[in-house]
Length: 74
Image (cartoon, rainbow, N blue to C red; front, side):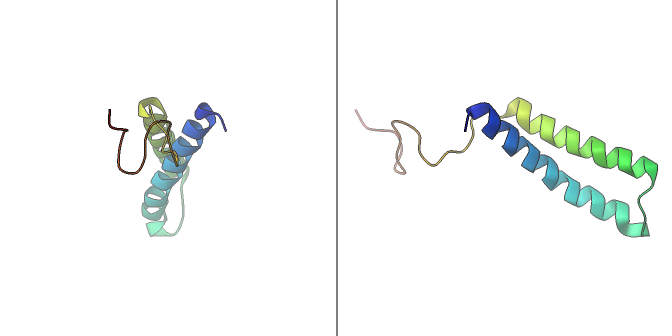
């Protein structure tokens, strides 16, 4: 999988995480109004874009030259 695709997937997962809290608050009165749908969408976009634009490294199982103990010693 390419690094861009991994970065996109991680960003979308962060966006979905933000939806959990917003939907919980929106459903307190038992229904989601049109304005609340707009806020739900805004929360998703803000979280996903914030993670996508600031994410320079995606967590990977192993990177070349590194181990669990850290970078190789000279």
